[in-house]
Length: 109
Image (cartoon, rainbow, N blue to C red):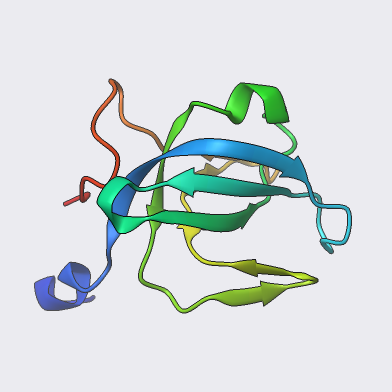
């Protein structure tokens, strides 16, 4: 069990995908995403979501990500946030997202 204080340390925020690109150097199939978090800036993320999503359908989609992890080097790419999703039985990832448009940067609580 974690405490409420532990949970409050995790910065989960809503952002809109600006770009989705192939990531051929990733060990597992992934996209390189560029996400706008409003006043929290634009950040990059490597996301293993290729089984259920095409690059073209990701642009403009709002997602939820953890934005206060330290950057992580993945192959030749620096991932600056962790996009959240539900892992299915076949290891496909379904993105978490708001059910209606909201301003980028809002915090999940």
